[in-house]
Amino acid sequence: MKKIIFMSVWDKTIHNMVPIAQALDKEYTFKLIHFGSLYNKNNNKHYFEKNIEVIDYSKYQKNSIINILKKEKPSLIMIEDKGGILFRSFCYAAKALKIPIIQYQHGMVPDENIKQNDPFLKNNFVKIIKKIRQYTIQLKKYLESATKYDKNFLLKKRSWFYLSKFTNPMKYYYYYRDEIQADKCLCYGLKDKEFYIKRDGYKPEDVIVVGNPQFDSTFEKLNWNKEKIFKIKEKLGFKREDKMCLLITQPLGKDKFGNWTTEKQKRLTTEIYEELNKQKIKLLIKIHPREELKEYDYLKNNVTITQENLDEMILISDFVLGGFSTALYNAIILKKQIIMPNWIEEMTTQFDYEKYGLAKKINNRNLMKKAIQEIYQSKQKKEQERTKFIKNFMYKEDGKALGRITEIIKGYKNV
Image 1 (cartoon, one colour):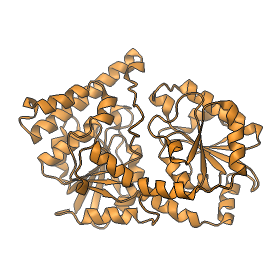
Image 2 (image 1 turned 135 degrees about the vertical axis):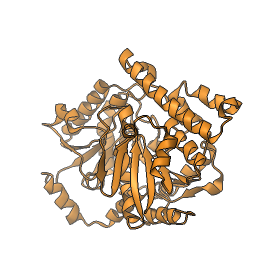
Image 3 (image 1 turned 120 degrees about the vertical axis):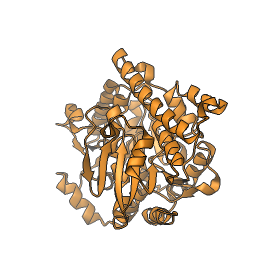
Image 4 (image 1 turned 30 degrees about the vertical axis):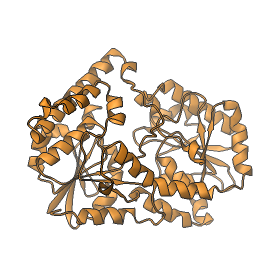
């Protein structure tokens, strides 16, 4: 049976792969190879999720990516990105072995007008040593793949240009992405296509706008009636008449993103709760897949913290709070207004929803009350802004993104 290999930095992104694997289950076997143990030594489990075998690269011991692919013999490789050095390594290895490779978008592309900061030097000495180890391992695999693809790789000025940029990994990831391309790039929307042509160096004909399969079911939920939504609300212990707000979190403090710390994130979440509590609004917190419920123990007696279905949590809420998470796309699809609490640290570190007219940034805690009141009093639906945003970043409201992707896969020669 033919095999498709997915490649990701960590295994938590598997939810993006499951729909593709289930749709093509009768024709292919699937494996996700990830590098989670580079960042957390305990993240090296070998298991199955649905019909996808999940394995950390460490299970292959010290094999190069070239040797891993020779052993696996995939018919097709699918990578979520190629900004990072490991993704580029897979591109070089696939091309060296003449294995078809597709890049498919995961999450939003960064806003080109927002500066990306490198948090490397904000770590303590021990963490810096660990990061140097991570980068050394990645660089070794990269050079093994690149020199297999091109035996003169290290003799070329162009190669050394990209290698020199790797001294600043964040800059390398965001700004010097056109080093190598997959055979095709599948992206969410028209604006994303512009990004991949300009930043990743693809030819226009090799970037295909397909939408995001994760949103297929979200579009379907637009037709849910109020009674169905009320039942979800009551199941969580809320009353039908309760005013509710959903906070969509990100591990900004844990990742030391920008100037964020864990303490700053706790402070922001606590102050959000206090402001909502003054207005008798219940706070529901949907945590990020890489966060754990226990990280919010300091609030557990006052708010509901959940890992339940994101769309359902959005639907039972009156409005949504968040930063730059792709999960806010779901809120836009489901026609919920968005507030970006920005008074502790900058929340628009990758993507600014406010400039598209679909969110309101609050730079002062004292303005939170007014912003919330405006949401409850407003009758503006912002349909024009929403329609334009969906076209630019999600393509179509037809719920058929998965079908477009599977047709492209099946249309590949020898796949």
